[in-house]
Image (tube, rainbow, N blue to C red):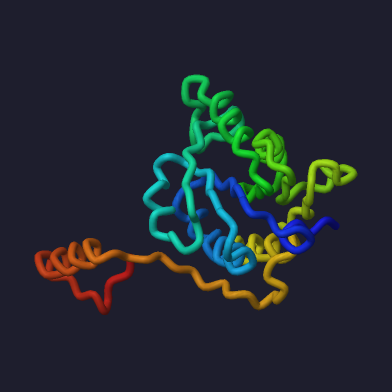
Length: 198
């Protein structure tokens, strides 16, 4: 299989994961592994406009956030008034070296990511979608229920993190204003932080 992260390390990577907070959090270890593999690459994440603040928490892993305008077959973001053609044209004009589909098992997501115009496209696909490799580097979808491990394995199979025991730790950086707001909420509400689960 083609291993685009190892064979010819890309200088620019576009990751597609237009999902909500929980799914994005599950991809943080894979983004961390991607950055570890490609410390000098420009890594852009294509996601939902409502998740822009999520990406801002990870400047060490994500260099740029690009709003996904929506497309048929993606219920998380309805298509925004025909914004898809202009969005695809903007991405194509940037000529990313690699586009990775981290959205799901393949199907419409692979078709969409191929339309980004990157030199190489990668991600998961179902066995029925297998081709001769002309589209890039695709890995068989693993129904493994652990989403974190699944996407870490994808990065590994593409030539990244060689060790299966890669750091699967989840992280959500909290800024000073959020800590201060929590302190105020705890005081005003008489909350016991030691026994509270959110």
